[in-house]
Length: 279
Image 1 (cartoon, helix red, strand yellow):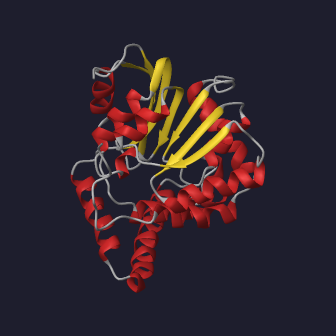
Image 2 (cartoon, rainbow, N blue to C red):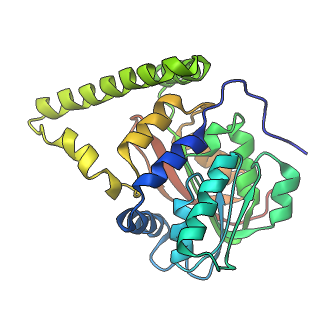
Image 3 (cartoon, rainbow, N blue to C red):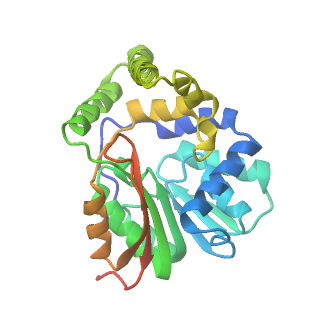
């Protein structure tokens, strides 16, 4: 059995997702569903076995369930598991087509016990495991023949990524009383930078729309994404080419990619399983 590496500094992702649930709305749920079909295709989720690796708040598991999938969600963080369970309680308490568990993508015995899925989904998760390539390999292995893998991985920006890794690690090493001012300092710097860019491009309202219209981006919350960005550790990155080559070697052919164009953020990939992974 392979388990999650011990990491003294690990961000409390579940606590951030628990807070995010206070902002959840029907509009956010609708946008999450739209984002799934935007990459996977309209109607492509209905009737499929859907695995949500690192389900976080449970939003995308709920979206897939609403689209007609048979969903299995899991997360390493027990608070995230509780978030997903809360969404099921709110929206579909009697459903037998949505299962939720605690587990690690790095636990080979656990992953084998799940079997294979038509759609394996893991957005912005595998680079936070402490063993990203092992996690991607595990996700590839969970995809059924002719099934699809939909993952999002932080873009490799070279020195900038090294800098942000240090920022994130420092946040998690700080005493709790110092984390809030540290977070607010970086959040303010990020938004000030965005404001300067908006003004210089003669579109000053653009920075405000980042907040007022942010839920149109996968149903997410700007504030909670900033918290995740500053604190999210472990933190690894990869170039689009590296991800594509790695998955191709494991029998997964690229079907669609959406990159951030060399900027900060996640590149999104959809692969189709053409051949089984070598054991």
